[in-house]
Amino acid sequence: MSAALLPTYADVLAARARIAAHATRTPVLRSRTLDALVGAELRFKCENLQRAGAFKFRGACNAVWSLDAATAAAGVVTHSSGNHGAALALAARTRGIPAHVVVPDNAVRAKLAAIEAYGARVHPCEPTLAARERNAERVRLETGATLVHPYTDPAVIAGQGTAALELVEDGGPLDVLVTPVGGGGLVSGSALAAHGLDPRIEVIGAEPTGADDAARSLEGGVRVQGLVPDTVCDGLRGLIGEVNFQLMRAERVRVLTVPDDETLHAMRLMMERLKLVVEPSSAIAFAAVLRYRDLFRGRRVGLVVSGGNIDLGALFPAA
Amino acid sequence: MSAALLPTYADVLAARARIAAHATRTPVLRSRTLDALVGAELRFKCENLQRAGAFKFRGACNAVWSLDAATAAAGVVTHSSGNHGAALALAARTRGIPAHVVVPDNAVRAKLAAIEAYGARVHPCEPTLAARERNAERVRLETGATLVHPYTDPAVIAGQGTAALELVEDGGPLDVLVTPVGGGGLVSGSALAAHGLDPRIEVIGAEPTGADDAARSLEGGVRVQGLVPDTVCDGLRGLIGEVNFQLMRAERVRVLTVPDDETLHAMRLMMERLKLVVEPSSAIAFAAVLRYRDLFRGRRVGLVVSGGNIDLGALFPAA
Image (cartoon, rainbow over all chains, first blue to last red; front, side, top):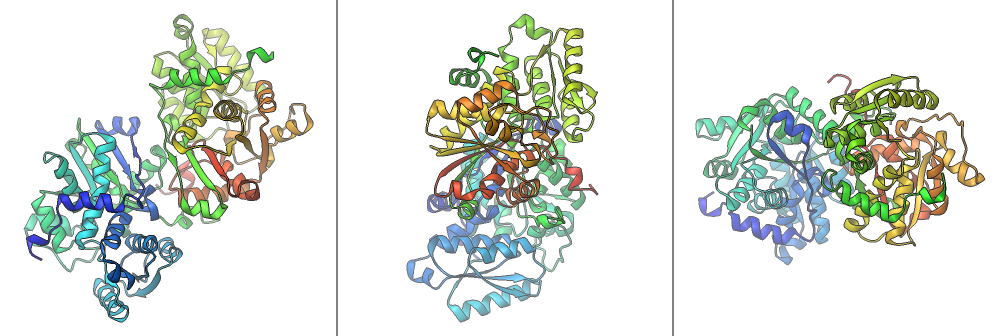
């Protein structure tokens, strides 16, 4: 992809206008206790309270409403470990068009149920990127649906950036912005948004040590491929896309890695102190702040709490 | 207590001004999925996101900041199964005065830890109302501290009503308002607030079937005493006070009872769909809406999500 096709800050602003009627303006929460624990001013942008339970609705909604009417009528298709699938299903419903979601057969049950509840057709496949892409292509050819890639689609990236805009508007100026990194759609969109507002904001991605392709790619200057992710963060098992890698480099994104046990500790702390249900893939941003707290001390830190879709069956086995 | 000592709507408005600098203006959340489930327009006032994790901070804060300087200097004392104790401890800290909290020795561990973390002195006692009152009186005589009763203190009742004010201001007009009923501080303060704004709002209290003294008291016209509560809703084990009973009658509050298993189901649904950590004593309001949904169909329903202080050790045994 040429640099000319990279989304820009203007695309983030356009996305905001396009999704305003559909997406929830989620609250920004603060906690004096967590501020004291870190020694920083933390602002949590609660995208776990977004429709379909994750920031992914922003990007999916922007992609769906960017299509012309004739193209939209044939529907949309994607492959997703869950949150993007549910988001696209719901976004398609807001426009009254069909959605097809190719899902790895080891995906979190609650996420599958959500996709079906939003009226999309689910296509299970093997849990490899190759199988997912192959199946999505097959559905695309059969139905004429438009592929909405979960993190390389420029409209998706621009849409994901809108959460960071609201975080600054509602929570005040930031010194640092921290988001999780999976495929890189959120962190790259957030970097476009943050730097559009204020080029001095440092943008940091938090990545599982067991899926650290973004950290290695930035370090080596070449995008790492073929890494097999091993992490409880089911939303962060995707490898970063080329467009995301380019944007991360252009926007000087720094990536910090966090072991899963620290992410689970942060998740519990967020449930105890913020009273929010968050998924591990979402808690990792706060886990990074705890792990590397010297980097954040005394600073105004925004965190995108990216989603809250955990399988509560594991927490309430009897219910 | 004579009727002249009952708090009024004016007291709720005064409380709002008094606590504005200290209490969080918590968000009002909506969920299309839960609306569809009930067939009503639900607005959830998230007091689980209040400071100290419950609406109780509002009443405690109003009581603490209502004291004159000389009285305040000797501190405050209360007895509480937990949330009011933590709230009073934190409220006292906002004014820099001592707090003493008499706590039943079977109270939820997380709530005890919170009280101590806010700098209050904890005085454990037997889990009976008589023992709690006796111990609080002893501390009061020894220290000169002012007793702030968890639900009969008029300043506490007025403070609790401020959540309902914000719920209507931020969430729009209501047909019905539902809150949990324990001692009756929240439901009576909320009724004052709601009827001050609009006398047509129906105010409903939700009470565990195993602690249904409010329902029985209203039905019989005489306040039931001596009932031994049996419910998982640890915040609703108190029996309603005389002033609360008078206010509930004057404001035509209706009480609906809910079995614990339905409250736990509602709690799980709120965690799944609203992504909020709520305690059972808080989920009971939504449980009542689900149980008696014919009463609510087609109406604009406000619910006070009263607190989120659950012992996560039970959910995360390994962490």
